[in-house]
Image (cartoon, rainbow, N blue to C red; front, side, top):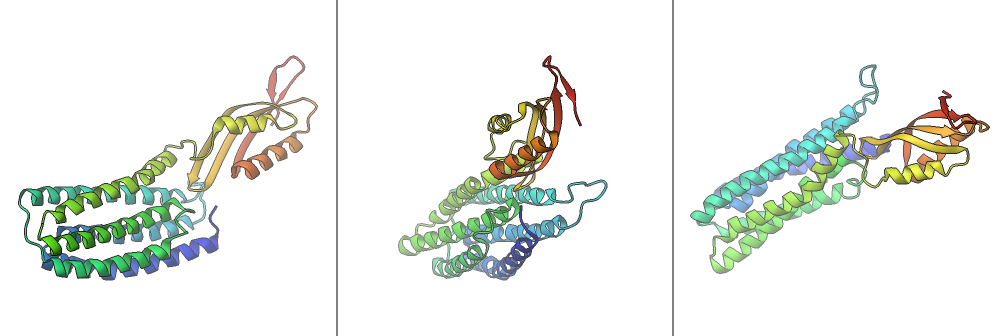
Length: 294
């Protein structure tokens, strides 16, 4: 689980990246209009979605800090997952706009001011590398941060593509390179954002978290001394990295319920990083029948 200090550091990183992205967005938008480059305009459109995405991520972090209430007993941690899902879907929307404009330009490729485009794209590449460096490393701890990082990564890919298109057009005058590179950028963005959207939906659907095998969890619990069998086992995630489990554990009649419960919780925490647990203990009598103990 992400600590309060890590949250503060992530908020600072997002704020810096948001400021850098917002400043350069206007420069790239103006450059795309002046040079008539779809690659630059598509990258500027992606940057605009970044501004919204980073702002949403910052808002989600602030909401996640709010304490739990009587109606929201888990607090506002799910805001991070909603932000991550919206960020991923926004990326797909941007790709749709890029594909639509690229199709038009394939039919009638306009002239592009390649030198100006190349200059602006090169600066954009440096800006995106700086932003990516700021976020790198923290994106593995939070799905929300991962979504923000993917936006910046998509921008970096877009800048690389714009630089490549500028070089090709400057050397050959082949203006189809501009929409062609834009389509490749869109495909790469779809590829990098797929896991983000899928994992966000899995968490909202309370699916078993990635990396956890329910059958393996059950076997591990049934190997604990005093536990006979485990049933009605459910594992899900409240937010990225915060796993929750509920289960019924049948224990031997001569076992100490408190000791066995401690063993179960220790096993779940040490082996599977599951700290939020609800375990219903059931005692098996001599005839093999079960009755509720707690």
